[in-house]
Image (cartoon, rainbow, N blue to C red; front, top):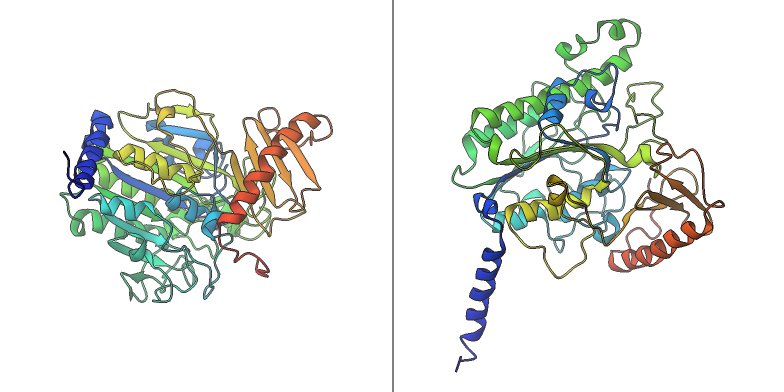
Length: 456
């Protein structure tokens, strides 16, 4: 008879053996993971997404080498919540990161949240974060969790924007120590830190998880002369537009350097790389340096219309993603968490709700099953509509009292020009019946920091 003392240990061994036997054979190779996140990059800002002017040769080539998503979404129309969703797999209001986080704010990603770097570090991965952090208000302070507390072995970051601009930033911190003034431009500097870590600082015996979150093309924009030189006519006639376009090319250059390093180190074939943006473009697109493109979609950053939340997304995993594939399946930033866990052969934690789904079936041409519809909420969205939900081709927008609605069929009307709420009352009711309970459950689970919040 099995003793009560030995039973738990034996059960644990059996559980681990069952987990290992269930893993696909290719998961034994333990792929490296890179999540590269641009800041305020619009859906239409890359050449591979149709921009007629901006030069992005490295990302365009990357798109040809992997899978390009036409209906990818950020989990929020602003930055901090989108970042929280990527690291936790949960819609932002569940985690309490409900808005962009001002410096000194009480808002932060709590330690009770399970993050990708923590799970992967515990599973034997080397972990590194470089670039913008923006998941706490009290940056580099013991009063709130820092990147190392969320599982990063090495980090080189700013709280929010590069200061005073992308040029010669002086507000980076490396592993808790202020770095001081740097010579160069933010995106290339951030990627150079990642390259140095890959070549010299990480344990080469371990697989790695690397997040590269650039500041480009978020304000305050400054672009290097070599990228401004790509747009001589604009520089003469519209220097602010030239600065924006050059900033995207600066981002593209930095991304290309990182991909070249993977090739140089022989890491391309065993590295899953995800490239995306945290939200739509800033400003109105007509003045200043906020000239990002939504690709014709309605709304911009902070809006729950498509232009505020639909973003470029490119994924390359050689041998898993077929080169040149275009995928029209809707996906969202919270999907990266379960996708990465599935790619490395780890199970989802079972003690909480995850809103994201594993995207690996899409790499095999299979249909994606989503039990929780895509959901967005932003308290400072312009106009009355602060909540949105997408199910299939249909999207509903609502005010917080659930008394005003708009309904769109995104397959037929991706620009959201025709409100179908009165024409399709049954479909409106169907989506509302999904939205109400989901909205209430999310509010109940997350911290109530948002109540009475007066910030933007």
